[in-house]
Length: 297
Image (cartoon, rainbow, N blue to C red):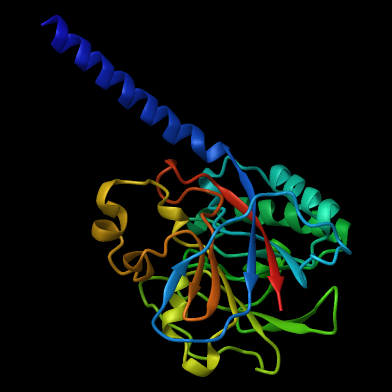
């Protein structure tokens, strides 16, 4: 009986630690760096690349990238322990260290439309920080944002949904298009086949759901893509339970594309774990993430 009781107490302690970590991990924001490079477009290959650690290469260095973007996604402000003040601190640190050419938000302001004001307040604080630093702030819609009206204007960012801007290299005369595709939500899903920009420059695509890549026509395939949506799995359950049982319509997770840096058919793709939590206020082994994306044109 003593052995049984001891085992039971150990199991109970492990379960308690697991639950406590699930509740604690959403508070830990990871600031990391990913370097995206241009590749030859090919077909049928997916490879996992590495995520780098900070610090950044100083601005003006010969090893500095052409562009440096600050990317964050999926704030879901109903349960987002990472405050706008902390996000602004990360943006300022990145800008002071190596310069930031643009801040990009990857969609999903909220989970439920009735809480939209809280999300707008968060993003307006980020927008104010960007204005103070002289950095443009762009964003796209997420699947939870499709029922929000005038969300970009009320959030303070410039929408990339079916729009594009041209970014210039900080070290050469190279240029790139930064564009986005809107998210129509998961109930009446409509995928974009074409991008709203030319093809004379490399294309950086912001698409909330990485699966958008699978629906683009071959002539619209970007050189680089930034996404969120999957939350890195949010709860790392055995046998990928979340994607094999609960989120069965998501295609990329079945190919191993859930979080991180990938080369997909020659497109360099970064999938962020996001910042906030979705429907459940937990994370486990998938800490919130805000990333400096360095792009070599």
